[in-house]
Amino acid sequence: MNKEENISLLFLNIFDERPKRIAKLPESGSNRLYYRIYAKLGTVIGVYNPDRKENEAFLSFTRTFETLGFPVPKIIAEDPDNHCYLISDLGDTTLYLLLADQRKDKSVFPPSIVDIYKRVMKILPAFQVRGGEAIDYGKCYPRQAFDRQSMLWDLNYFKYYFLKLAHFSFDEQSLEEDFTSFTTFLLQADADYFMYRDFQSRNIMLVEGKPYFIDYQGGRKGALQYDVASLLYDAKANLPPHIREQLLAYYLDELEMVLPGIRKEFLTYFPGFILIRILQALGAYGYRGYYEKKSHFLQSVPYALNNLRNLRNLWLDKKFGVELPTLFSLLDHLIADAGSLMPDGETPNPKPGTLLVTINSFSYKKGIPADPTENGGGFVFDCRALPNPGRIEAYKKQTGKDQIVIDFLRNKPDVDLFLNHVTSLVDQSVSNYLSRGFKHLFVNFGCTGGQHRSVYCAEKLMEFLKGRDEILINLNHTNLPVGRKRVGK
Image (cartoon, rainbow, N blue to C red; front, side, top):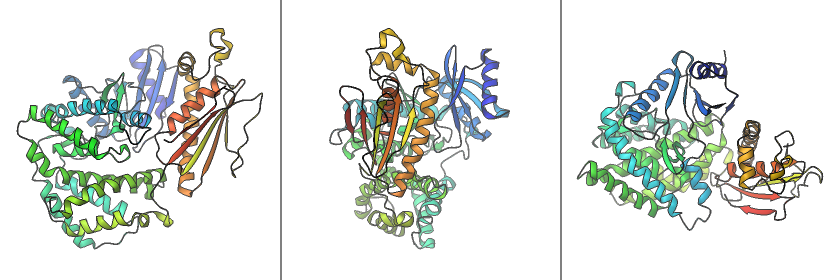
């Protein structure tokens, strides 16, 4: 049996009914595959992961967190032999997507987002301290602690998958000596806590405004500073420095309610953990971008380098806590000469408007809109096979932007499946076009009247794309009275 059949059978064994449909969700940076399962009772998420030990870690941690009352997905069923399990469906809204949606004016960071980050920061000490006391560290994978070996893995990940694949020259022996000094310094920090490992905005789901936490299967025993650095220096979230400072102060106030007097020691080692987290992230971007040829991962490089730039004054002012002459000199060169890190002379400095994506909804009665750019065309998606709300009397005067129509189409599995295919195709082209320096991409959605289905699908594609800083979106509903709007993200 294939992956979907095994997940379907597991669902059948638990609920005594077959799924109405199973839709594969967009893939991310891991080998795990996620599926949304539709049935009479609603939806659940099926997960396939060939790494059995990683599955055991996730399931063990989740049971512990559930017992402690932490907001995590519920385990519904598991099939270890076929590498799959079922968990509750937390929806599609991550903190990262909400941040991208609400932060349209770069000069203002939305107070509502700050409030959500504070809710997250309030919960984090519980994961670290109470969770750390209850976790079975024997289930950790691939290592029980963020120890010297783990740190050297991350530093060498940066060296081999970022520096070497980017053809950046350096003195390897001197760099290794700095790695040894750096890990020795970091190991002086108290590390008797649960370290989430990948505590970033894409792994925080929002359900009715409440944060839920996922993807902690790489967790292990470690220092408090690492997870705070992961969240506040999350590359593409791109938090302003003053917001980082505000959130760090809030976290430390919450932490001191559990661990009085911890603030000074925390701040002593915090810059070091920021640095190792950024270097690990650069290694991941290099692995996915250079090695696996997934060029869109390289679009995060400028944000990571900007975070390094923010740290630079600390090592120049001798306030970093440890002397790392070769590493710091190398990082100065990275910051100053980012363009040399990209293959074939490309620049890793995406700016809004690098790629203009024009999204049109239209009526087939009036014809496919002409492409005014030099490309001469693009995607045309026919929405006429989807359920038609225009046939329902109550919806005839509504459009795909009205909530009653949105709710109608959102609850139709065929529409969800259609959009999954659309976003996958368009996302592939966006990444390819960006890597090749193209300037325009044209995407059209057509239906009979250009009022309901095509409008809804065009809006959904805009929502999918607009979190990416390197593109500009021009959304045009050609058959509605007010058609054109431009969104910078």
